[in-house]
Length: 499
Image 1 (cartoon, rainbow, N blue to C red):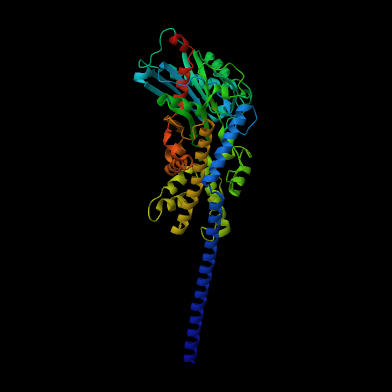
Image 2 (image 1 turned 90 degrees about the vertical axis):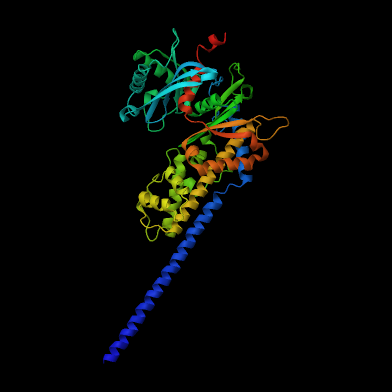
């Protein structure tokens, strides 16, 4: 009887071992099958995001065509090609005390700059940031908003100090950076088309924002003239030109993206006013709204667009800018988790929250150079609550970062080449040795090193030998200092000084 029990026990143990082995083999087969799905999704995404040089040249050509169309007539293109009325960019000769007001989000900044001409340049500048209460941003009135701004500005002016000098008998002048959609009417007037970025004050829409600010300053007992109304991209161009006379265009590559450039006034058919003395006019492309059949749009981009606050608009921006790169990554990871068990047998619930992956987090993972990709592991754990990611999983994340970022940077480069083509500066010309500088502001370009390096390398690919004469230069704080410089170059006292 004892022998029989032992025999049965051995048979049972063997059966259990055999069963476990079969289960492990099945799991391995399932895992390898699932991993094959992950790799297939990765390969498919990479192919759909591809930006070979031929495709990028088509994008650049399409940008040039749209620029021509937008200059020819209002509404003739997806690019608005807005006339900025800035026809005098800073030269470096500007002198005096100038203010700037930068309104573009939940905070606004007031700034003063003392300019000392060619020799001393920016002698001193001071900045103060003010947070706008939610009840002022939304549901209030024009008077409430602009009184709040004017009061803060008056308090700032009152702290001027002895280091800043306003010549006797002169009015203080200010550059107003207003980063919302505006129909510009002159260098110092423009009506608000619509609010964005969480602002909602109905009685401002359709009003001249400079007029509203002027009335509020008067109520606050403040004698300041608004000399220039600009957006942040035009401000970046002004700041870039002040520091480098070879600057011909400016780019914002941050949360959003845009471009502005210096056009010959006679090359703007829709301009019906007198030609400016300088013969030049700064054009604001609003290039985030560019679209072309040559853009490599994937299903992830399409779904992001449909679910966005502005479906069908800003397609180019949604493929390039810091607002969206991390969200594209989240969407691809979510699909891989759902359809190919990227993170094992469960889909992290945090992965389903839109915009939970920010582009700075994506950049940190992309820049991880540790052998075990520990930074990637920590980000997955801290943000998405994936406790135990494998090296294999982490490598997939880095590959996705590379695909998304490379596509964005390469498309940005194609857009720049489109502007250079419009200006005839995309090829080397005999006897010409002129450098052309593109001033760039924004955290995406400044802090995402792999994005920046990829953009610069792509410029070389697209331009060949002509790339040697094109310089991409970081230009910080165009929306602040740039606005003050434009107040200086459009000062009511400029003509007096020249005569």
